[in-house]
Length: 179
Image (cartoon, rainbow, N blue to C red; front, side, top):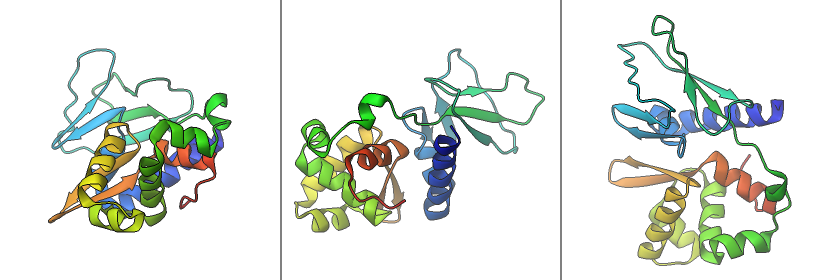
């Protein structure tokens, strides 16, 4: 339990240091969607929480399941408790071949390249993997939609980072991923 929470805190700390608050919030996918200035959270009931200048404390929890939760008392500081990634036993036995069969060889290579390279542009990924820009853009879009990569615009570039789920998938396959 400590390792799962610690891994989440480490990864999110690196994300905020490398990409700022926006990258941190975008990295909460698929549990939440950042659409500035609103963080949309899959919550069991319809509810709006206005921060009104207050911060939002993110609390990773091993015991939180399926969706995040927030404190119900509006008088308290805003807190969002979200589930950390738990590696199911079946995923822990996944092999390199299994991941390539699931994602495809090119998509697996793109995911591994983003993980090893940190924040990467689409052209960086295309060059490193040896595929066309259009193919790299498409593959990154599929990985982003699947919650394995988070992307953010930085001037005229789009930077891509691997998500906690993407790192977990690569870790069980033995792919080199920056820890």
